[in-house]
Image 1: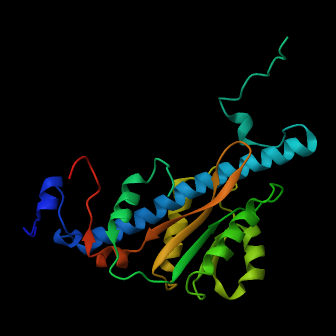
Image 2: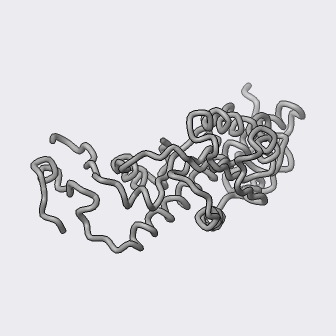
Image 3: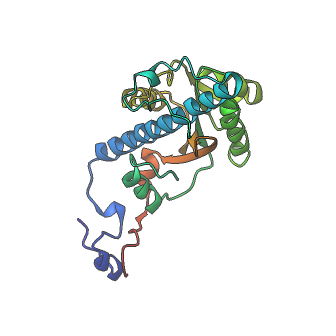
Length: 86
Length: 155
């Protein structure tokens, strides 16, 4: 590793330059590909949550019931029917 | 920036790497789905993409996951569409889906300086909003001049 460390980086224990690390080229490639897949996965999950929820809201608004949600019925956390407050 | 637990380390790295020169050509990856009947969830991302593309290179490629947004954007920005996917996101998404999409994006040969993912963010049980996150490419990471250390404690 390049020993050009400034006061700032010594205080933090980090290297000043990203380039100061000797890296094999494949490492950067793997990192960038993994980062893309990871960010896509996070966005897919977030989008799926938003979509399922939006569909649920629309269905409840238009019909008053929730049906046809396939996997939601199989979820272990399905809440027990709510009892009306007395 | 999103606060999900999956990626803070990598996003932190991106936040602290300064690319040598910031390219204006972005690749937009738009996440919607194939099915309708869920309010404005597809037009939300389409609208966000149309707004975002105004500030960058007008020839920036767009890749779309989901047929609904594809139908909308192929009317608005037909010359920018590079690649579209369907049948993704009809079930709970898995990392394998994401990896397959990422692989096809990287192999597509489209020209871009960075990747912007446009998606819907779950805000509450009543609302969602379009959000975006930027991913740096291999080239820009390699060219990054300086890695600014994150602020931890007293400098």
